[in-house]
View (cartoon, chains in turn red, blue):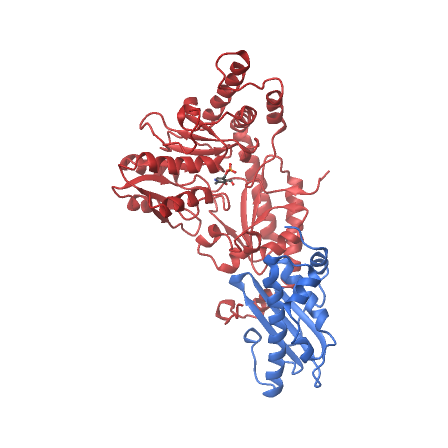
Length: 406
Length: 137
Ligand SMILES: Cc1ncc(COP(=O)(O)O)c(C=O)c1O
């Protein structure tokens, strides 16, 4: 039986897996110690749980447990990586290389440093699929460059960047490479050594773990990466991030990583099948649907489409028993359409018409079919109401029209 | 963001969706907004020689509040004289539909659409049945 509403917004967050919840429960009650209490059994039990989780988290990215610094989530990890490196290596330089489609946590950390006069930043463009060119990265590096920060996979369009190539360039040039891998972890294989990654941001809530816990991977050897902390205090997490550890959340994060790593081979195939089913179904029923993002180098659960002549928010309103998201201006706090979609260089109108489907672990074929049907019917209804559709049908070139915007 | 029940009602059951033949001399067409801004409204008014709005049609590309604003406007103007219709302010639409501050621009667009449609009708009446493109209304 199909249960409504349907959740298909798994890039925003994911439901905690019942197995993760079960692993967490004892740490809300019986095992309540402070992991930093070194002198009694309560503290030891908490510490043991944290160290087990640290091992599970490290394993999913092929790192060593001691290279995992626990944070409150990827926003903090991104801030710590960027601000921490720029501050620590300020004698060496002050230049950052990043890309226009990064998450706000990265872009706004860079902007804050620029505003404070602490860094200069190069924002690399992307191609029409949202992919950064490694050659552009190479060319942007100067002798003042201290950090490259490029995400593994984009949270809106799912495009996977050529991370290993960028990592190789970073090694050649001796520049630290930070990668926000939030959307990729547990979805595609991630290996910090093979990709030449020195710092990596992770968060639990995108892989069926709890919200409010994340990690920063910090390479310990070849090279050993150093950071200036942004939160000072009791010197937890090897001095890089003070604060009493969220033991319950960390246990959940660890359990989530272990499950995701174990199930990834079959799960990624299943997700890809569901994604292809959704894509094929919508393309079959509707004309003028455009794919945003890379056709193949893309997260298996991601589908970002623009439905021409239909505004995204109105479509979301029409499919109110399906939770997806839109790049439409009307759904953003800034009233600007998605900067990620706009960076692809497509028509502005199509940016307003974009919808992101995020298929996840709990999505089913039945749900995909329901969504296909619901979306195609609503797109048709809204097109009948759309003056743009009517004009296009009459053969009017919408780009040649002299619009009177207010 | 939660929508007001009136916005939802108009969105789900929009009134007077469609188009009149645009070369009809009695029809004034207003097209306002721009696709790159995320909303375009087309409002058509069928106006008698004495200046009374006898019928209205709309098509809108835009968010739910833009669709609701145009739907409501078609009801609002019907039966009104153009002098009355031209005096309609966006605040009337905001109040009727309970639009939140971020959606006020939808009501402004609907107000502009009324003015544009009436101006087009006047122009056509003045210049007889001159060739006229809808999009330039
Ligand atoms: C790519 C990316 N980076 C960072 C974040 C922020 O993560 P968190 O919610 O853990 O702060 C998100 C999630 O919104 C994301 O998708």
